Image 1 (cartoon, rainbow, N blue to C red):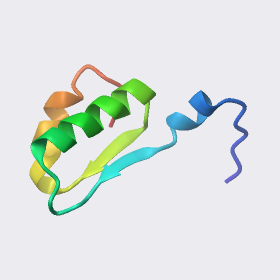
Image 2: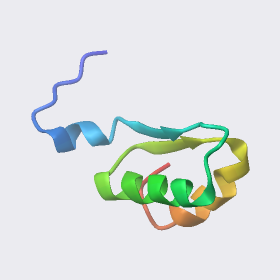
Image 3: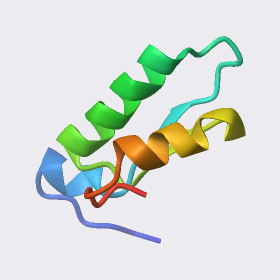
Image 4: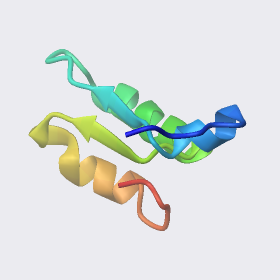
Length: 64
């Protein structure tokens, strides 16, 4: 798949923002979610333990 990108902002919606470190904590997850929303990333990818927290953090956003 070839995607034509003219601006950095056009690229953000193609990125999965990821934090899969086993030692990740709730504050780091909250920051990850805020960054994903601020930059317009496509989604976040976290360990299953934090999915519910991400769902709350990302409600009313376009981030998956």
